[in-house]
Image (tube, rainbow, N blue to C red):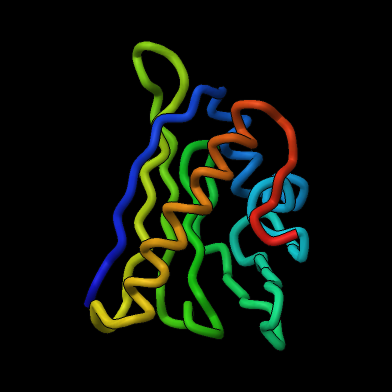
Length: 138
């Protein structure tokens, strides 16, 4: 199995970053405007993308103030798990630690998603720090 692991510092409050990851308004602010985001364990995140015939669905398996875990149910994320952890930074802001685990190998899809997450997290950082929506997929 292959995992993607990233971290970035965001100059924002933990609650702001959590809302960007776990609420419909938040996800639509940086990731995709075609998002139906449930909240709480067992709820679903459905994410639509241009040219993709059906939304990619993820199920919330863990949800807390500083941790969110989503399990992919269909599409290329089926069988993978995304874990978001929000940690305080002593100098201010937070560090977001992200792991997208469970890829069968380091093939093309894995490599595409590694690059994809890096570009999307640039949008997440800007949204959390400024509050100005600029979704990657609009």
